[in-house]
Each structure stands twice: as structure tokens, then as C-alpha cells.
Length: 348
Image (cartoon, rainbow, N blue to C red; front, top):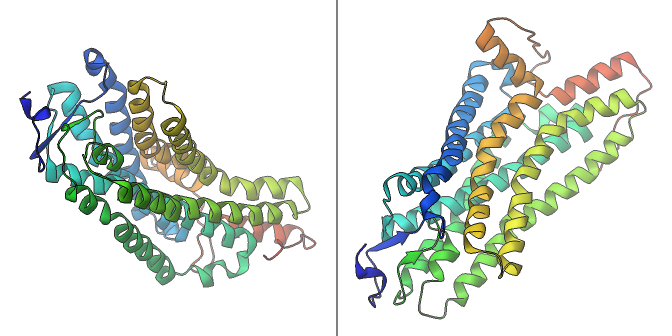
């Protein structure tokens, strides 16, 4: 390592990524679970994309949003893991300043995108359960495309100031980043200037993206639970709730580590730095690995097609009904056919 980390400078050409500070001797061992997470994320998300593309019966809003989630997970994990593994395996710690800012943009952009996709999926579950008879006429393919385009544009515009704000600051303290990737706050903390505007903007984006998303998801599930509990039989309630279980598990896997990391960052001053960094890595890298597992195991339609893909047999249920591949719609429709007295979910 050169003395670039101790020399005063205002326009660094490189940053030094430390990996996991204090655990450098164990980097090779630490890399094993992270490498496994990356392989599972790549294989799992590509499998989801392949199955949905291959099966026409899965060409519906719920599965289109799932494909958006898979693509987001692939890009997010790929923007972090290859460089992280090169640090762990080859001690390749240097990263070009522009490459660092690019990585920062991708990390924050696709993290926000993931939150937005969970919000879109909550809308899908709300429409499917609370308004099942209007589901296919409201969530049409053009509407799904517009929702996806809105998430892409809004996320891109909100995240774009991050690298520009980071580029304008003078860096005269050090160019060492005590983690294995370039996050906005980690880079800005190295600046020797008043960076409050970056901090305030970061809080603004956090509220606009994740704050509003959490509020919308919570409101959607209040209405969904009201609709579920209005069904008269336990069987109907369990079947309908089962269509939300994958989404709920994925939401918890995304937001709980995020919440824990935020609390640790603000109140964990006495916690060792390497623990902060490990939690930050888990927060970013766990969801891309877990999402395809959750949806692959808990979504009957994907699970059955996955089994058929590998065994060339297995139960395959083709949903009937023009243009509607919603499992919730099919569940409620069958329940209505069986019991004409079933109460439709309350509107709201």
C-alpha cells in the first residue's frame, strides 16, 4: 500500500477498501459464506427468470414483479460481491475514485428499487385479495410496465445526486474506507468539509424511498387482513393468507436487517467496527439470496414448475381464465363456486 492514505489531497485517484477491519487474517474464511450467498443468489434468481419466461401461465402481474425483483437482486449482489471477494482472496483493495462512485450509485439505486418492488407487490396482493373480480382489468400489462418504469425513473433520479455530492468534497484526511464496498455515508465521512447537505439529502432519500414504501405496505396489509378475516371459513382464510406468505417473508428478510443496521449505526458506538461492517454486508447481500428461495419454496406455481423442470413430471396446475394468472383470483373463485354464501372481501 502506498502512502496515499496519509498524504493530503483534494482529488483522490483511488480509495482503499479494507474489507472487514480487524478480521483481515480471517478474510479467506469469511469469504466462504459470502461466496456461497452469491452463487445461490445468481442461480436462484436466474432460475426464477427462466421459469417465468418458459411458462405462459405465469405471465401475470405477480410474476412480472417477481422478475423485476430477481433482476434487481442480480445487479445489487453483482455490484458488491466480485470486488468484495477480490479483497478477501487477492488483497485487491484499491478501487478507482470514479469506480467507487459508480458502485455507490448502483448499491443505493438498486436497494431503493428493491423496496419499491416490494411496494408494487403489496399493491398486487391488495388488488388480488380485496378486489379479485377487478384484478385482471386493473393490473393489466401496460399498467405493470408503467409501474416498473416509474420505479426505475424515480429511483434513478433520487439516487443520482449521491455521486455528484460525493465528488465535490475535498478529501484531505485519508482515502481508506473501512468496509469492502463504497457506501455513500462511508465515502462522505472521509471528506474534510461540512458535509451536512449530503447527510440531510441521505435522510430525505431514505424517507422518500423506504419510509413511504413501508407506510404503503403497512396500509395495504391492514386492508388485506381485514379482507381475509371477513371470509367465513378458516380454510378460506388460510388459503387466501397463503398467497401473501411469500411476500411477507421477503419483506421481513429485507426490512428487519435494514432496521437493525440503522439502529446499530445510530446507537451502537460501543459495538466493534467489524460487527458494524458484517451487519451492513448481511443487510445488502442476504435478500438477494433469500428471495428466490422464499418464492421458490413457498409459491406453489413456481415450485411445481421447478419440480417439473428437473423431473419432467409432477403436478402442474394451469390456471384458467383469460388473462388472469392470479392464484388469489383462482382461490377465491373456487371458494365462491363451492359456497355461494361466501362474503366477498370488504372494499377499502
